[in-house]
Length: 216
Image (cartoon, rainbow, N blue to C red; front, side):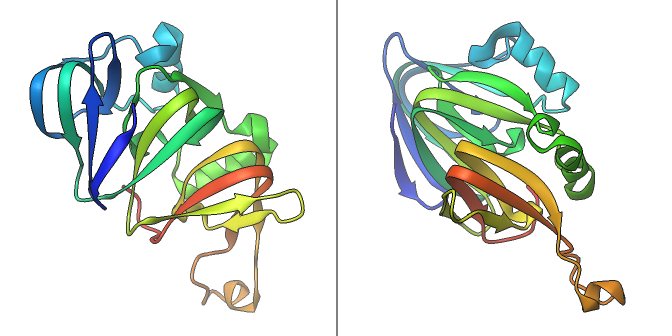
């Protein structure tokens, strides 16, 4: 079900009979029609193992199941919202960035170290983000949250993208990531901005970057 962007911080979704969607608890702003909201305890579309994986990963972001017939407005904390439409591919996104998404999407958890090896594990320690990330796969829409708006940067085999780990929001496609260092003279003498680490994404796909280094 597509999201309709009301403004940069609010989206609206239409729910019909036989459909469902998931949202972060507290994300519902208003609704019209016969719509129900129930706590989700089965880990979304991924089932029990997905729920266990997220809890092990410290990504047990509470979800609500949204069902019925009507329209629902979503927003949370005044954060900017970016709608991402998936066409059978997989989106990798931090769990606390998720605002709402189609119930038809298959939800799972991926260990970041499996992509970046030891450097993938270091990324979690350096940035404060989990070693695991949430995956959403299939055909449907996802609304993610960010500070200050989001820009989509294409990733091609000829042009990898380097991102400040704190500004990373999500990515999709056949993409590999690793943590690289960018130590310069100012960093060595202790006067750097703290941007000594960069997240390098290579392959074919796109990465979403927020206009801030602030975490949610």
